[in-house]
Each structure stands twice: as C-alpha cells, then as structure tokens.
Image 1 (cartoon, rainbow, N blue to C red):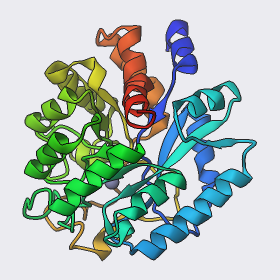
Image 2: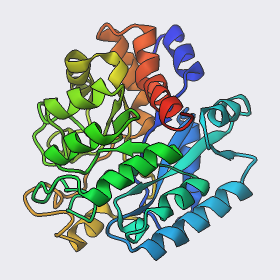
Image 3: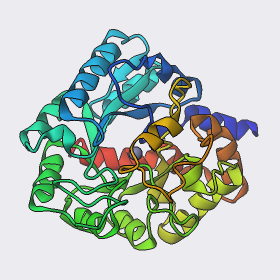
Length: 329
Ligand SMILES: [Zn+2]
C-alpha cells in the first residue's frame, strides 16, 4: 500500500454497518478489539434476531450494554455521530446496537423507544421469513403490514436507521416508500454479480439510493460468490453498485465475526426454516471477509480509479451521512 493511501486509511472514518457476532449474553465482547486493531472507527453489533425471542434479545442487550459501559477506556456507546467523532479523538472504538427482525418488539410499538434509549440505532423489519411487520427474503413476499408501517414511522420519529437487509423485494420497496429518513441495506450485495435470495436487485439499490441511503457490502463468501472472498470479487460488487447509483451510496457491513468458537455451519443447519436448503447455507467452511480485508480493498479501489473522496465515502462517510440524518434528525 502506498504511503498516501496508508495515511488516508489511518485518518479515515471507518464504519462497519453490521457485525455478524452471534447474539448471546454469554459472548465475550473482548472480540471487538479486532475491529479497532483493523482501524475501524465504528461498528454496529446485533443484539437479537427473529430466531430468538424478545426476552433473550433484552438479556443480550443488557449484558452488552453493561460490558461496553464498564469498558469506557476502550469503547464508546455512541448515541449520535458526535459521539463517534469523540471516540476517534480518544482513540476508542465507537459502537451501537442493531436488531434484525420484529420478535424483539413482542408486538408492541412502545418497545422501539425503549430500545433506542438503551443504545439501539438500527433495526431491520424482517429476518428471512415473514413476520408481523414485513416479508422476508426467503419467504413469500408478503409486503409491509399496517404494523410494519407504524414501526417505520416510530423508527423515523425516535431516530433509528431503517434497514432493508433480509426483507423481500416488494416489501423493501414499500419500506423505502414509507420512510421519511434515508434507508440502508446494511449488509446486502447486488444480485447482478451473484444471484442469491439474500442479495438485492437493481430496483432495490436504486430506490435505496434515491432516499440518500447506502448499501453495505456483505463479506460472507456465499453472498459474494461461490464461497469467494477474493479482493477481485469484492471489488466487482463495489464497482457494480457504484456504476449503477454512484459512489455516495456504498459502504461496508461485513456481517463478520472473529468468534472462532462459533461454527456458523452448525447454526445455519440447525434452522432450515430461517436458512433454507438450496441457498448454499450448507457450504462447508463458509469463508468470511471482514475489516482485515479493508487495506487490500482500498488499494485495489484506488487502482480501479476511485479518488480519495470516493474511498473515504466507501469507508465511512456515506454511512455517516445517513446516520447524521436518521439519528440526529
Ligand atoms: Zn443479517
């Protein structure tokens, strides 16, 4: 890596819009050190998803929140982008929490402002299967329900990023239509490069970009290609989205976990309803790109002709723009 690029990477805001750490009160969050070692400024950590019930989500959030607050020498629980700037100056890793799906609400809209008060800043409406709010990407595309519309409105009101990852095609277009703040696909790749039900079509990318939103590149090998995490392949995805909607609408949401004790294959095979057959979830030794790949990616993106401002956008400024609007109003 050339010195000027090294300097750019060191100084840049580096934003990972979604980590793939399996949520549980038992997780040792010292694993977050890896993000800081790889130069990240901010990461969003998942405290629940629809495979868990709401009590487990709340217990996970309680444990993570307590741990982060107890480790204020290394971490900042960020409520807004000013907190992320402060963390950078103090050489700490900023983080906030996200939730994947609606089980965490237990059917109650009032839970959204409670989660917000506890540090949740991003939530997606369906996790692979249909639920009370929205249609999932591995299910019949049931659309956004009246409850789902109320959820989007409440998320806009309290200041949470509306996340369309894991939802179905028509449903995402309805979510995008309902939201008054920019929306994201925090960890979804373009179908045009690798056709997978978890990936998204051009119309979804264009509708998201039209809100001022951002698509985060997912680092999971089965969403990038045939269990392929090569820099070549990742650059193809970035190039495609950038040619379709412009460089201001791409970032990273690696969905990555350094937790080597968790065998992702065992988890995925345990619930064939949420992770159905025929979608490569049974791939042996699923590979996963994460923040460790960022320096090589930055190198190749610069070689591909992207200027410093575009690269800073990919690394974090694009997601920051969404957060500035969605969190801070
Ligand atoms: Zn996910």
